[in-house]
Length: 86
Image (cartoon, rainbow, N blue to C red):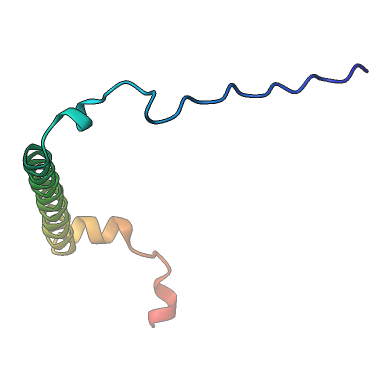
């Protein structure tokens, strides 16, 4: 078997040689405002997710309670070994 040649990564240019990014061009106030808006949107989205989960859980509990009061459902899903209750 032939030995594999190791590929050395090319050295990255220094930070001073890199082109200017949008973050470098924007002022500190604008960056802070954008970060605050981003955080607000994330919090709002998380609130919507929490509300949707709570609503789904409430629906599931309501359906479970309805089924617990349904004699046909209880009869179909109960253990049919009645001899241990004699």
